[in-house]
Length: 539
Image (tube, rainbow, N blue to C red; front, side, top):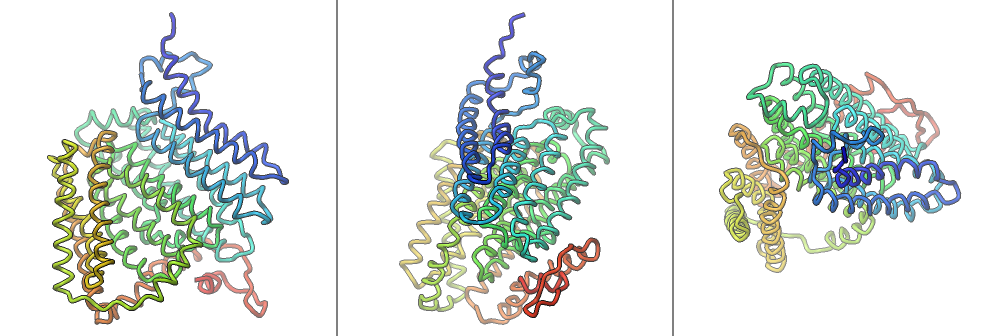
């Protein structure tokens, strides 16, 4: 019989060429010109990703036709090209191309460029395989491969003890997360009878509730995602890998650390039926977002402040997943990736802006009633702007009950910025315009991404209580710190926040007792230092 599925088949074959291009370029990385083939592979992959995204919009998945794929091309059956996959694929290829171009200039004259280029290609190949696969086993193996290849990038400077220690901690945590994923695969495979993501989601949609074993598998999945997303108290490695080259930091914070959220989105029907897993997501995400946002304000290093920002952003993304706002979690991944890649790659020029800020006249504290009144005004304006955007676009999201708590969270995060500039009207008006623009764009993108992914079908009122309580507490602390920067609360919090709440110190001691790193750093007198002392010197 004539096979009529050549359209979807061609698009999926082109998609498979993307990881193949990165993998094949590995064999052509030369010592004389290590980035020449790498750059060509990145441009080719980006072009293919755009063609695949366009082709997939005209040739959507057809399970019946793909099931009749000729035997020599059966591999394409494992390729998923839904809306979220196409978006992530284009995002990974674009950021990869930018980072490769930046690396070529950044590492000019450095030794080990060939080793760096190969590790970078291996990382991108593994990430694209993970994004494209519709099989949980392949996703897990690609996730492991991404971690192992990234480890080579994090230890690029092998004479820096702090880099080796941070990479060692990440290696141990990643292996723990891999063990959790293996447990998830074993339970889901035994229960469902398949590791195909579509089959697992279909099985979840056909069951009103989960068995205790599958519920445990969902909790293990959430643990794996939380560990690899640098949630407290597993965050220390993320804030200590700054000894790696800047493009590696950009790749980590803009791409690799976001993978967990994407995996959760792919398994959304399963996670929705697991209240314990969703509660764990909300608790860990809220605590991390609130704590990391406060700690970030005490950092003096640009890159370390960005690292704490990443931890907080990942916490908020997990909160969105726990609440079932899958469309906003996908939007968060895309926007955070682009922002953090830009922020890290321009971190060198941020010093000039910091100097200008340090030389500016010191702001006077704003009275607490003024801060509260200004914040309430901003909250009302932002709510009106979001409602106008949704009504203007005639979006059904206007009737979605979850949009208003999410708008409140947006307002709680933006209003202290505007309130803190009260009295300096130029700065206040500038920040107000920015806040209004952000609110309007939030409403627009809420509609756009709502058409890509549907929100959770099951409301989670307890989750909203937990999240709103956490962010109201954060808002209150920020208001008090703005109005009383030298007050009792500020004096009590400042040293603890500057120390990162001492969470990583406890975790580091436990890590070194379990499996100490093998390194012999030297102090100024040439004497060997223990690993813990080396870490303290580096921090």
